[in-house]
Image (tube, rainbow, N blue to C red):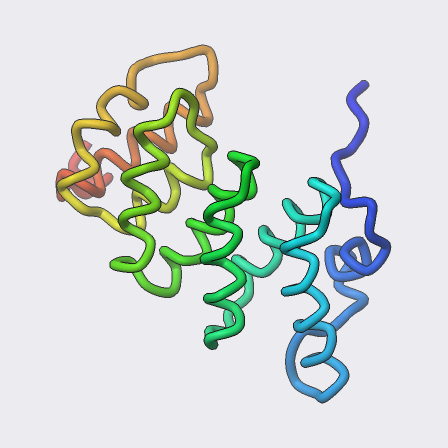
Length: 159
């Protein structure tokens, strides 16, 4: 049995458990700032989870975008992909160059494919065709196919 992948930070675990608010009060704003800081943590699991959680937040302000932009250049592929997905949810044009770069890498994380689907830009089609080839990862294949369809302007209802 595989161990569950969790951050080492108890604070991040509390956010995942929905025991910590990130909006609606002064205390929550401080929590959000702490989450932003953890996107630069030395521990990879903390950076990964913090970036994932920040990308999922509805809020959009300069500090969040700055943290996601910084994380989009992280050494870790998954952290980068989560950050780019968060950027795509906020500003497609800001995310597009990161998606283009991410799709040209030797490997691609699923959040990068999800970001490509949000961007839905024709410049991504040729790279997505490569990732949409059948593999031993059906979930990734489906994400790539969805992104390719979005970039080609094909509605899933047309399949």
